[in-house]
Image: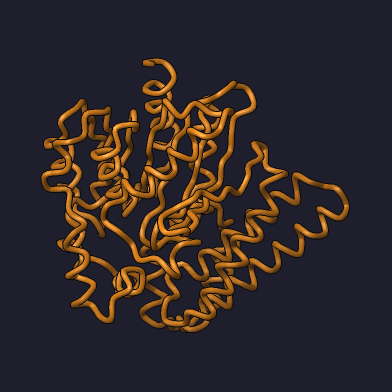
Length: 357
């Protein structure tokens, strides 16, 4: 099969990410082997999602709730990865997006650690949506807010959340401006402390979590958002940045075309020139020196999207105690070696939120 360049780029850049975040390896091979043109990408993955969704419906009808959760989660991830960079066909993207949200909601009551889809009041009457899950064995647990990247969403962070939950921390995965349920009307914004402020305000209204012990974990572009928010939101007690850019506009030329297209759309720009101008504000210079809480920066030396020296610079400029985990064999977000950093970062956060306060 001769695939077009965009399909091959998606396979080359994101295979480890798909597998690390809930796509079955057999589904990945089967679906990608069937797609020759990028125009067919979302349809093929949506068909995979529909297959799992139907299996989930059947399992739920027969009261096999663990199986229902399994298939609904797989359906949500398939729908999501069908639409995650499919910005040239916004209507098709929107349909798949809605299915991803819908099937994930169906899975939540039956997950090993159930969760709730929460609505958080935001600016000018808007709503910021999140997924809150709490460990059953920890009364009033601390909370780790999970922050997606440019093309990821709160649902994709499900497996990340599991590691924190096992260690007695609740997780609140959110869609901020330009992400997931907020990507259609709200552009991405450099001052991510704003959505984090609303999220912590919301947590403070609940009596079942400890909003005085909040950590942040962000991946990819979320690895910029998390330290930026920690610099300006004093209620953040610890922060993890995984492969985030120091100055995003400087990385623009390194990005695959699909990601550049997504940056244009999610910044609500007309073209690359306007996107670059807007992205210049996404810069950590003068910001890192404001971070006084513990900081962990994770980076893969083989990252083809974000320059590894960005991570070194973040740590060097942080005002508080900062650690760098540089993995020589890690790719972008170190998705090819999740066993080397995901459980360990949860241990790190547990130490900061549970044992040091």
